[in-house]
Amino acid sequence: MATKPKTPAPKTKADQALAETPSSDQEVADFLEHVKTIVPSRAGTGRGRLLFAMDATMSRQPTWDMALGLQADMFAAVKAVGGLDVQLCYFRGMGECRASKWVGDPDALSRLMTKVSCRGGYTQIAKVLSHAKHETEDNKVDALVYVGDCMEEDIDHLAALAGELGLMGVPVFLFQEGRDPKAERTFREIARLTRGAYCGFDQGSAKQLRELLSAVAVYAAGGQRALEDLSRSQGGSARVLLEQMS
Image (tube, rainbow, N blue to C red):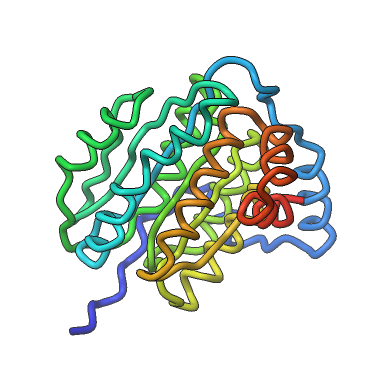
């Protein structure tokens, strides 16, 4: 049964001004050139911080189960690079959006994920992006992973939030199940604005998703140099991410 389109949340005056004053091509080009000058802050020391966000609305149950089985590989991939702390963020139902504490081992993350059940509702990607911004203001978030299938929000508002994350040096890596065209267009734009990456997948792509998530974890723990090292030694998904981020 088709669902009614979600009514976007009320905009602030700043949001309205942004929507009423479209950027020129040159302004967009200047913005992207500035983003390209941002250098990843992590040089392979200390512990990386990865925010792992998921759409937990009802259609996501199979993907949630898949991610639960793959998340341990993210930790295993960074053992030679450094430590990794992960925070789980998810939304579901009518307005529920929650974030866990930061955890540093796969068993703890698994326990958190197994307590979450998927429920029907609309997407709340704006809340995820805003949360990532607030977290990195307190303590740098090295990467944001988002897994979902659709988008029911105002694309201009999401692009504005993504632009702020890009200026803060937080790349967003978006993994889309299926090929909903509106979601794909939005996800690609968020990836572009944050110098992250986009990739589609389906239920038969568990191996590819495992490799991509592991590559993102390596980046979060060791920065772009660690990802380049992984690309040279293994190629594959690490090279795919590097090509999109360049």
